Every structure is written in C-alpha cells, then in structure tokens.
Length: 394
Image (cartoon, rainbow, N blue to C red; front, side):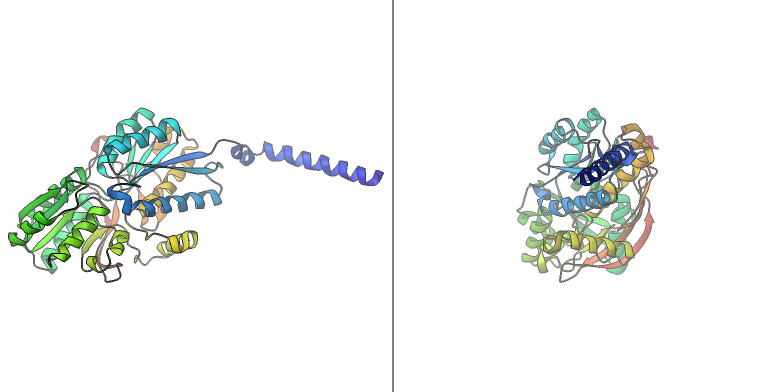
C-alpha cells in the first residue's frame, strides 16, 4: 500500500510539473487568450439569399483549416455571422452588432454595394479591418477597406470584346438593378462599348427587390439590339430576369456581369448559353482548386453549395487576414492594415495580393453556362490589373 502511495505521489508531481511547463509555453499561453473573432455580414435574407449559404460555407472551411493548423497567433478563431438583409438598413444593424456588441476583430464580408456603403462609416468608427469579397462597381476607398474581388476594369472588356470579335455584335441593350452596383457596372460598360465604336440602343433598370421584368423585356425585343448585357444584384434578380427572358423567347447573346456559378446551377436549363466573366469557376484546372473543391466536399458533403465567384474570395480573404495578423505579430488594426497589402494567398484562384490601391490583380476568365449549370471556360486573361481605384491609398 505504501509503495502504491509513493508511486501515485511521484506521478502527481510529474503531472503537476508538466502542467506548469505547458502553461509557461508560448503556445499554451496563446491558447488561454480569448479567441480571434471574425465577423461576416451577408444577405441571409433579401436579394443575396441565393448565394449567402455558399459564402458562409467557404468562410467556415477557411476557419476550420486555420484552427487545425494552430489558429492565428496560436489563438482559436471563431466566426460570427450576421444577416445584413442584402441592403443598407440591415447592414447598419449587422455591423453595429458585430463591431460593438460581438466585438469582432475584423469583418470579412460578401455583400451588396448598398450594404457595403452603409457599413463603411461604422467600420471607420470601430477602427477595424474590413475585407470586402464581392465583385463590385469599383472605387470604394477607405483606409480600413481591402478588396480581393474584381472591378469593371477587369471584368467588362472580356465580355464585350468576345461578343464583338466572335459573335460580331454591334449594338447592345443593357439591363440592371437600380442601385450602385447595377448602375456603376453599366455606366462603365456603356463607355467601353462606345470606345469600341459600337452603340447602346437601350438601358433599363428595376429596383433591387423587383421581380417583374416584363416591360423591360418588351423594350429589349423592340430595340433591334444584337446582344444583351445585364448587371443585376447577385442572386434572386439574376434568376427572375433569366427565367423571364427565356419564357419570352429571347435568344440574343446574353452576357451576365453578375451571375455566379451556384446561381446558374439553380436556374437549370434557363441559364444554358449565358456568357459570364469572372475570376473563379469550379472548372479551373489547377491542383490548388482541386484541393479546395475536395475539402469543401469533405466538409459539407451533400449539403455543399457550389463554390463560386462570390464565395471563393471569402475563403481566400480569411486566409489573407491570418497571414496579415501573423506578419504584423499583433491584432492591432494599423499594423494589420499595413500587412494586408503585403501578404499573398495561394488560393483556388491562384496568387492573390491586395497591393494595388487596396485591390488585387486577378486572372480573369470568360465562360459560357452549360446545360448542367457548370461553366465552360472559353478564354483566360492572366493578371488583369484593377486600374486606378484608390490612388490616395497607395
């Protein structure tokens, strides 16, 4: 009995010593600290509700991978998701909640331009990093804002040039959602078409939450246009417009500047033949993209939403934040903001570095939606620069 007691005592001493040693190590000390909290505001309701689930999944996968690799500065990462309602009023509530109640360390969000614009003053007041991961109309400039998605300078030319050189189109009809993204994209498109010596024969808009395109489609059919280019809010407006175009028998070459691959799949046969340009498609044939798709499938199984040009930048942005914090060696905002323009992420879209006035050069693709909703890549444009977006932020 005495021998057993002595063994127990020795074991206890060793365990206690090991415990003290572990607590004294830098890793253990980091693990005792509060987690790093990333906030994501996204349209779980409203126009973006079609694409929001894929965005949340991509965010969660990145966080899972980061935690499996030791977290950020050895600290666990947790996700806080808020519904911005796909608009300005919802974004104000979502950002107030994330930044001042949940006290997130950074915001990484795919949102409508209306939501982003409403959020920026709140982000500025909170003095936190904000990585915006949605393609948009360009020239949103703020010290705290970094963007890893495409702008018109990177996306419009491939569509217009392909139509004019391969399909011999000369006149265009433009359709958009009536808010910053829709109007901004089509303003750039109109000017680019004119610079090529072609013309716009009609330009029409519907409110972001509108769903009846009947009157606009009638104008399109009467216009004599050779091609249609649309810029609607990602998600529901893409679905309603495309379905109504098909029901009305419109067969013009159709370039959609805002449809993502997941939404295209949800449309079924209605999306077949639509042309689109973007920085990500599941058919990108690289080892890194195949690894990403495999990881998504393994993590979410049959519930996986199709990765797309709105969700994949979100995955890469979470990794960019990790790299920036670890380069800075701190969560201190000013140091992290400096590092965000210095780090690069080897993601499904290739090497992404937000070093060009808080934007990134991107490899762009023009593709066409196939019968199964997948996108066949027709042409590739390497390292397309975003142009002069925010000169004051050099």
